[in-house]
Amino acid sequence: MKIKCIVVDDEPLAHRVLEKYISSLSSLELLKTCHNALEALSFLHQNKVDLMFLDIKMPELNGLEFLKTLTFPPQIIITTAYSEYALQGYEFSVVDYLLKPFSFARFLKAVNKVIDKTEEKGTSGSLQETTEDYIFLKEDKINHKVLYSEIRYIEGCGNYIKVYTNQKMLVVAETMTAIEKKLPSKLFTRVHKSYMVSIAKIKQIEGNLVKIGDKGIPIGKFYKMRVNEVLDLRQK
Image (tube, rainbow, N blue to C red; front, side, top):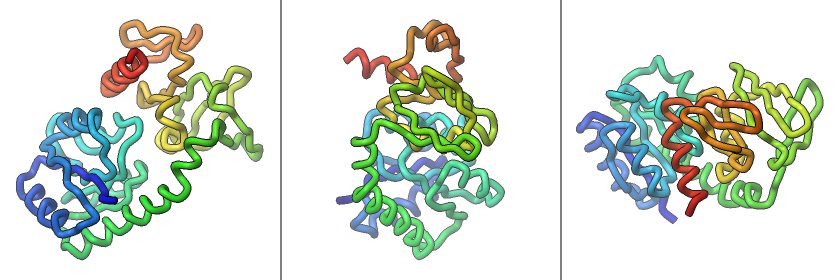
């Protein structure tokens, strides 16, 4: 099975190089080349993408800001001329970080990492997401088994998160990005850089606020489209 990928970069030269490299590998299928993050966002909302080659320095919305808006991003390989973003890039669990100009050999090494991760997910990851209805959350030294149905919303506080359930609140040493990858996207959605909510627990949406019970949670500027998309899917 081919890995479906897109290129997101504002430089024509980068497009040509990546198109050439991708076409050389039978394991990859290039679906689209995008010149900015907004173009890529629109495509991702309508198509299944396994891998994204993503530049950082782009107009309107840079690559890392773009990643913050994605609820369930594909695997990411960063392609950039700027080494200073490497550490920040890995905070988003990117597969690899390619510094321009990069050779075909270096490109192939990055793609092989994606292939390995894809094979691992195929044998275990998909089964886990479809069969489990809970997550273990560690507060201090205690692991709590929490049902997805009990979680109301999650608040990010730097390197910690506050998980509000029907019965209690847990403080967990986890980032929002990390917990977002662990929770099923069909049940939870990011509405703000600091908030993630249970879709089933949404009482109402008014303006730029999501109501979970009596709690009003702000909708971030870059998450508005995602919230609207969730509503559209629920109404179909």
